Amino acid sequence: MLWNALLLALREIRRNLMRSALTMLGIVIGVASVIVMVNLGSGATAQVGEQISSLGSNLLMVRTGQRLGFGQRSEAELFDIDDADAIDREVGGIAAVAPGASQPMTAIYGNRNWSTTVTGSDNNYFPVGNWTLAKGREFSPSELRAGAAVCILGEGVRKELFGSQEALGEKLRLNKLSCQVIGLLEAKGQSAGGRDQDDLVVIPLRTFWRRVAGNQDVQMIYVSAREGASTSKVQRDIELLMRERRRIAANEDDDFNVRDMKEIAEALTGTTRVLTTLLGAVAAVSLLVGGIGIMNIMLVSVTERTREIGFRLAIGALEREVLLQFLVEAVVLSSFGGLLGILLAVATTYGLAALMGMPALLDAGIMLLAFLFSAAVGVIFGFFPARKAARQDPIEALRYE
Amino acid sequence: MSAQPATSAAPLISLRDVTKVYGQGQAAMHALRGIDLDIEPGAFVAMMGPSGSGKSTCMNILGCLDTPTAGSYRFEGVEVGTLSRNQRALLRRNYIGFVFQGFNLLARTSALENVELPLIYRGIPLARRHARARAALAAVGLSGWESHSSSELSGGQQQRVAIARALVTEPAVLLADEPTGNLDTARSLEIMELLARFNSEQGITIVMVTHEAEMAAFARQVVHFLDGHVDGAQSGGTG
Image 1 (cartoon, chains in turn cyan, green):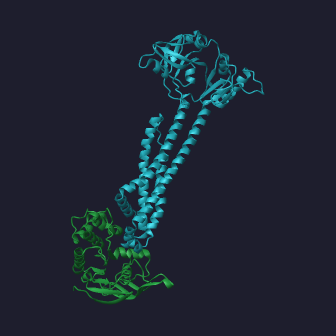
Image 2 (cartoon, chains in turn purple, red):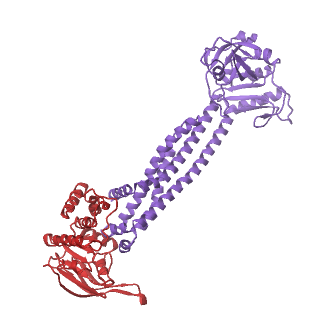
Image 3 (cartoon, one colour):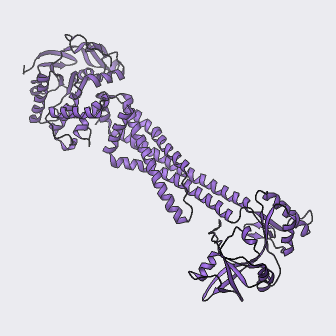
């Protein structure tokens, strides 16, 4: 009986190909928009997570000043190198500590120049910040001690200044400081905030002090916690140590802050997840509208085919057979629309992801869910018109003009 | 349908004092006022009468599309009046073929698919369904027209498709409600000849409503309706 209903329903769809296609369109768009929203949302979540972990997942950043809001800090006395040494010595659960000081500068090579950020640090900067060398070498102990004029370039700076040329061994100028390129860093890509992480030049801290800043300040201390160590405990220990070293009284607030990148990562991925849910819910409304479209068309179709239904009933179609035929018709339309919607969603996801520079993630769960929902839409919104068709009086229906 | 045919001597259709009343009280409309009618297997009956005389109501009752208000309708010995809606549908499916004035072919559907439609409801498998539908189309002289849709067929051809569709199930009786009402005289005569031939050659029982005496002349028995009564039966023109 189901097989017969399917046969009759398919013939009906074939008879009204144009109308069937237009009916399906509502479901196609509904399903596709739900899936695309969720796919892009999980792509964004994954991207944020990836970018944060590229910063170094166990990274803690110690800076002076109180955080006032996004990107704003109060003024406070800067750290010095002893603070970094103290953290390394006295706080447990630490893998590496890198003191850093940085300043925006213009890098010049030949007739090209590029505004970038120059950071003075030591070799710990690389493991702590999750950087790996693509080419060349790190700073040698003597270069660090002597403050030699050497530098290691991020991929962004290398590309801008050297293009396809070999950078290693060349000399570039940072304002008046001429320094030799001894290493090149592996590319990381954009940060969660949309900043190019590869836009940096690293030089030895002593070189920075002597030839760039003219002081011995440490603006920032990067700390990476050991694998398995609790970053919040490390954070607390650093805070206690720094309060002591900076002689902050018990009733005073910190004039520095320690930021745990993992915390930021969790907050950011949480936000994108909420947004994904919200977008998916909005898209689900369009799926519902698509379902109502199916009901609308099916009702019109029942009225239009009144005589035909009367005839079917007259030649001995049972009420439930007519009901099933119309129901199957609605379900075939909606679930086929659902399938097309999935295909459209996959294509759109890849297209948009490429356009927005995001990873294209296909969420199989939401695709299955959207498909089942579209089939359910067919059952729910097809039932009322189908029942209307099946309950007609054949004599009345045959007389219908 | 578990209805077993009674003895072959019994009439195929037997109406006894059948009345049909639409509405109630003051507004009651008496369409049939006590009708007795027997139709033997192999008969060719024409029902005639003016509009509102009750012939269409009688046809609907014969076709199990409607039930009598009172009286008895026995089809092959089975009382129809007490059957449920579903049981009557099954009786129509298995024993009755319908031909209508308006053809009622499915639009944008080939002649073959139209003819095989009743067989789909009977659950006949594809190969047998197609063979029987082709044979039925051939019997009405439409070999080679199987794949044409109804809009590509003339009125006479459409009615022949409808006849093929009614006969493809080999029903016990063919009910034709003004089968020539939408056709010109030449096409009407063709259709009547076709029906008469099915009746005489294959012994198919036919009950037909018409108000054209020319068409009723093809039947072997004519029943006249007037004001809800059967006015009397008489032999038709052809033997």
